Amino acid sequence: MKSSKNIIMIILMLIALCRQAFAQNAKLDSIYRLEQFEELAQKGHWEVVKQKKGVTLSYRKLKVADTLDIRELSASFTILSTVGHIIEHVKQPLRMQEWNEGVRHSELLENQDSTWVSHITFDIPYPFPQQELIARYDVDRDRERVTISTRSVPNYKDLKKGVNREKYNWGRWSLYPKDNGSVQVTFTVISLSNSNIPRFIKDPIIKRKLINSFINLKDKLSGPVLFKPGS
Image 1 (cartoon, rainbow, N blue to C red):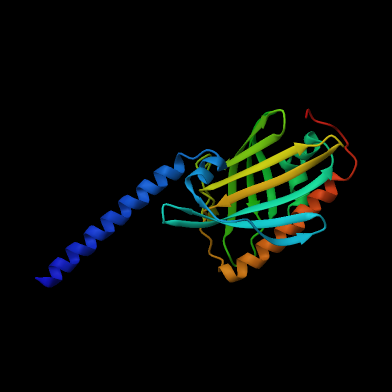
Image 2 (cartoon, rainbow, N blue to C red; image 1 turned 60 degrees about the horizontal axis):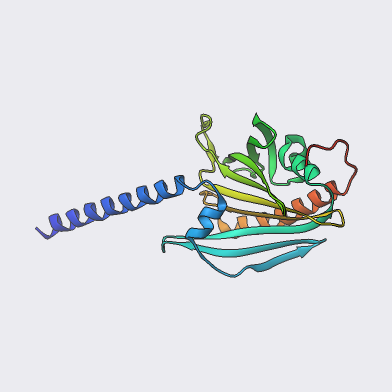
């Protein structure tokens, strides 16, 4: 009798957990901008974890409904460049592959002036499975800044066997033009992707690749502007 009651209790607990997970996923599916996620979360203080060659890398903890504990990443620097030149390096696949050490391949699936969809394959070491992100980028402009908002669109195309695709990823590029011709750049991102790479291996690699990537971007933006998209 006790055994039957225990089984029933376990089944009821599993049903409750499934319902909770379904409700959580439905909530996450309704989030289209990083700001929406930030508004839901209890926010910790930003902590600087690395500074190198004018690039500052920071993290803070976010907690949502006592069930999600994640870290939000921010990278910032100031560069003498134009907003259009920066957008070119964020958008164009070959440009991105030049500066982003974490990207093996990138392609545009949609391409319009103020919105586009990128398919990014990350540079994941063997023997871990390949990981990718399909993300929509939207550019908004106001008097003080230009914002590029990004969000994952995992169902945009069929998934290949053996590939992990990020389901929940939101990011934001904040570009603040200054009177002296420089632009203050801040990139912020959160990802809820599941990874098969242990955290003690993954975290140092991510930190190194991120700081080096933004140093590369800063160096690329310091070079000559070959053509100048609308800014």
